[in-house]
Image 1 (spheres, rainbow, N blue to C red):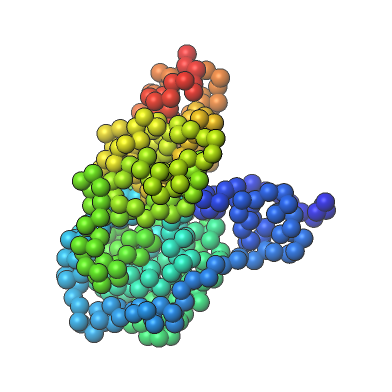
Image 2: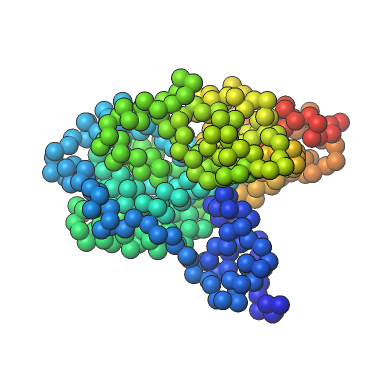
Length: 437
């Protein structure tokens, strides 16, 4: 129907798991795609990004935006004061590592300058889309937090590393950053917007830095850490989009606003990217320590009609898979590790009785095989071997366990170390989904 001038190609994750399946015509995203929608988009020539309405510069300033940044520039605020507020709030890195934000600022400030800052907007973890949602709605809340962080550590330049699958956001940021600079709010701090090339590994901070420098995105051996030797050999503050997004609110409202939230002994708020077999997928701002069962029932409208809760991925592709019987574990940093999982970027994917945990684990392993940078043998060869073994009708459990352990122990970075997590969890918790020798 569309003729022979149309090419259909497989696409990488587009960061829109809440509206899957997603197709793309040029740079135009087609949510909940079907044949009719795709055909209509092509016939109508819809190939450019369709950006949603957002809070622009004028609207943000009218609502008190950039007042805190101006106070910082006018010495009405001091870096140590903000570091203390962040420490009291309990804010942690929300890209996956969970390192205390105030402590990170203090560490970077302790190294001799000149210093730089890098913002990780390469949201490549399957199931994660919270950064896109926040940037699409309120880009200046992010930009103000970013500039405050740069001021606090005296970073001379800022590099924003944005994933290539967000072309519409790139257009928005280019326009709004220019307005910030024209208003003199950057105070001479150069802001560089760099576009990633779709490599999952570049979400790892040292690989991201290599990519920004124009090199192949390969993780670095540590130490030294990027806080000491980062971009172009300089001390570098690396932050996730959501982490700096909350800085204005934390300072304006006070640390108690954030730290008073939480359940099951945990502290703070978490933005969960929830997708899968639920009625209301999307980004859910919920108390840290909420359980998967509570998240589904209270924030996601329950399970989708005709689907029974079977299991969930608490932390995206690499965070592992747990059965519904373990859905009452608090979701936060440090609560899932004893069960072989972790929260990571808080991407929660919900499986139902119509899904196969075995198929999910195999699909994820294929993803890791494709995204391995190839630098180290345990990851490069291990993921390839695991895919072949997992594609067999009968799984060689002993060999898979041995392979998983080798990958976890010997891989250079978190990709290879965590790639086997879903496999391990299926072996441990979903015996009915597999046939083992």
